[in-house]
Length: 141
Image (cartoon, rainbow, N blue to C red; front, side, top):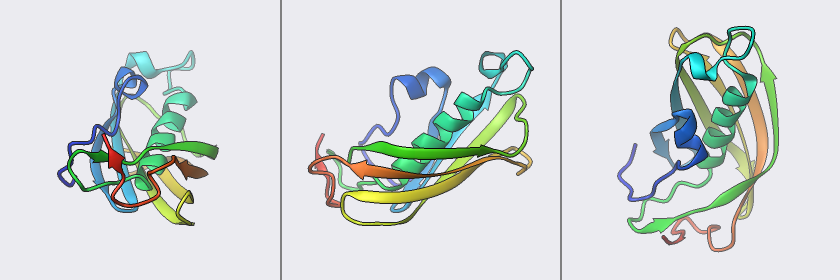
């Protein structure tokens, strides 16, 4: 991850245990170590956890700002998630990549894999950069 003073994840993300392990222009990677707190009644990771990871990775992919003391903020406009396989406890990794768009609205796609690289879920979405965040220079934090 490039050096930045920006805290990419907070609050809800920290509650789930997510952390950003890679972040650069157009790409973000979020990891989470799933344990019993993340499981549903069937003993697999709840789909909401995977969707939250994807939402964060895809959104952050379009919000990178390398300037210290500056940030870019955004919001999800739409997110479609497809679950491919069951996720068990252990390391989960979501990667998001910007695929297109303009200054304000951008599209991103990505996937979640487990520690062995098995595909668990994929998503695509549309995101909007908030006022002042359209520029790569971002806004004062």
